[in-house]
Image 1 (cartoon, rainbow, N blue to C red):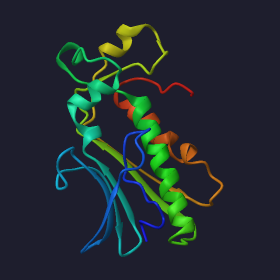
Image 2 (image 1 turned 30 degrees about the vertical axis):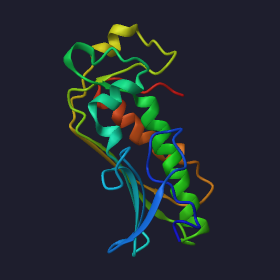
Image 3 (image 1 turned 180 degrees about the vertical axis):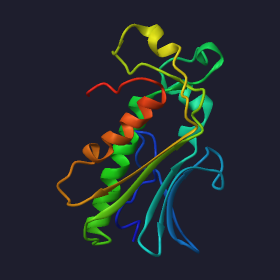
Length: 186
């Protein structure tokens, strides 16, 4: 079902295709493994027998990867690591688009659908300005460390016409708030 439905693993924006698919005791999984290994999973989507979908990205949660995403290899800012909100927003939006398509076309679910999203272990990470954006100058971003460890968000999708980004905006705003900043209207 996940193979025919082309269910992608939850992953960084712009990385599509190349997924592995397998059955497990919980249902079915689509995943990407660490290069050179078929056991160390980086990104995954689990389809449970109950038709619930879970997405996890371990690579988005690593310090080195967050730093690389900011577009430079100079290393972490001021002893912390960089958090790049634009990449997370695109990743969550594209993943929710894929999940809603799969829920509608393959699972044939009927709204309302419960949506949960979260980011873990970000306390102390520094936020990196989105590409081309300099709100109140760069120093405003480089000194902002997240004051929350985990951010969890719950919402519902009541019909298929609601854009995924619209569903996720309150979650994105909570992430920015964790850094003491207001999310730009993009």
